[in-house]
Image 1 (tube, helix red, strand yellow):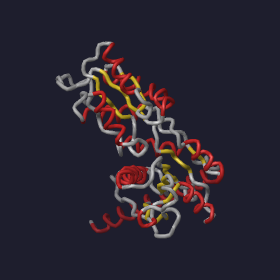
Image 2 (image 1 turned 180 degrees about the horizontal axis):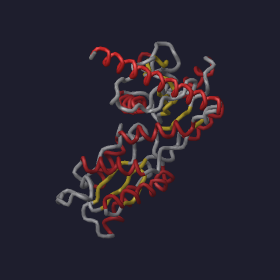
Image 3 (image 1 turned 45 degrees about the vertical axis):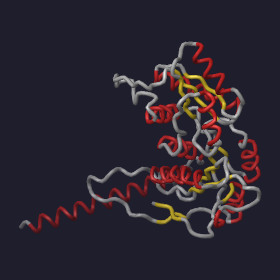
Image 4 (image 1 turned 30 degrees about the vertical axis):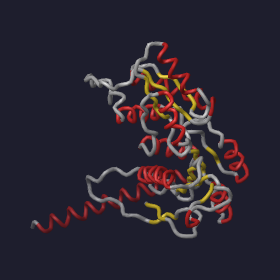
Length: 316
């Protein structure tokens, strides 16, 4: 199954796709049950070229991993104005459109790795429309993996501890920078512990939007023996001002890795949050699914038998 956007529709509409055939076809991932609520990815930013590129790639990952998922992106309102061409929707607009169309209330997944100021309003909006708002994406080992990869891409860490070649620019201490205030920095501590275990260097968390927080963390690392501290953003992208990232690196004199962006594991976490929030299937739905699977298996076996019989007759 695949999804296709239809102009004027509140959410993408499911359209049939082709199913792989053959004895050695790749096993297909389970499809989202028909009638399941849609996924609304709540982005803590207004629509723009940078935020669009990240969220659309993340949704592409989700759709490729889970057939049949209906997903849309909801942004923050831009001072009452619509996005370019009127195609970008706010979270409130998507929830209202789903309600007007009589669709199940969507599952809202916040695109943030930890606490953020916009979550209070998002939960209030979900309560207003009866929509489920999932937990944030972190802390999680997959986020530590993503940060590790971004550090290695910037030449600030080994790709893995099994590779023992030296990297002259490798950091001997890491400041995990977050957006969302002191609460976000505190929550990032768990991911920091996981990252420290991967890198075998000290890791401390700091908030980009708390003045002096990043500088204090860098000084702490230097006071405890680090000579080459580096910054590692624990931000996906849209939730943090890019100028804050640049300013932190400039003021501390530390090199910085790139934000997580559309790293594949971020898409996996979005999908996991959505799937965990779906209603449990009823016994009737499970029985129906088992019957359909059995019927499909029987039809395929019958087709194989007929094919074998045809080949046998041709050999006579």
